[in-house]
Image (cartoon, rainbow, N blue to C red; front, side, top):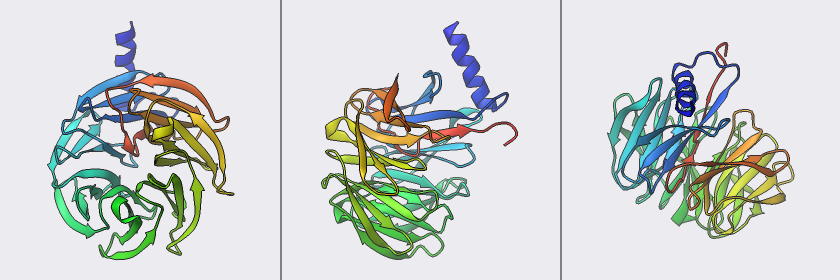
Amino acid sequence: MKSRAIAAVLFAFATQLSTAAAKDIAFVTNQTGDNLSVVDIASGAILKTIQIGGKPAGVATTPDSAKVFVTSPEGQLLTVIGTDPLAITARIKLEGGPLGVAVHPSGAPVYVADWYGTQLFEIDPAKGRITRRFHTGKSPSGVAVTPDGEMVLTADRESDQVSIISTSTGKLIATVPTGKAPFGITIDSAGARAYTADVQSDSVTVIGIPCQCVIASIPTGKRPYVIALTPERGFVTNQYDDSVTAFDLKTLEPLAKIDVGEYPEGIDTTSDGKSVIVSNWFSNALTVIDAASLKVVDEIDVGDGPRAFGKFILSIPKPDQ
């Protein structure tokens, strides 16, 4: 009966039919396991495990919920996964150490950071190749695109900065200093602010995108890694504390420390902003946090070594949306 139930959920996901409300699906890169866990967050069921290879780490979903992109730093690959049906549609060979990945709001191009170099790849997924290369600081890790699609930002870990690049010209607009070793980067829905997790400073740097300036620095736990945002709050994973720091987006003050699994890394929010999902690398599990109460409400087992670095939650909308 359980296998039939999971099959039914997977069929509904693939066909995108008969959904009474938006369904949130997590695409979790399991770096040690060399695969991807596809998880129904509401039920906790693993819908499918997809073999990726190359130690997958980065992940990004398209705004239309049609595709998922996965980077493999050791395999030098960008794997393209279609959601209807749920299967690999392409493997794009890259170079260097492809890690952070983000998608233009229009659905293409895709931007991939070369962790081993000082460049950002622009990739046309339809053509399956690199179309342009943008110069960044050393070891770009996290990547984020502004909601209007006009700028792409990279967290340059070994340069202690963020690079702001024009997507139209490919030119570097500005660099903004951060704390030491920024890794994850997240942009708010208004495109007004960017937030970096500064691994070696135990802080989050808040950057004003229009002014290209630092607005604030927020203290976190040990080894902050990635940030997720709800309308009112920010959440950052702390690798060495096995915790998440919640902070207020208006006051930019810490609110609480939330204990999660062991060595938390990737973090994202559900489509309604009510839940925060944390990927725990050493615990092989996702932690579900209620964004209002700041309490842990669930834990979901996934594959071996989950990182889920990037935008890993995809929302299947209502049929009339």
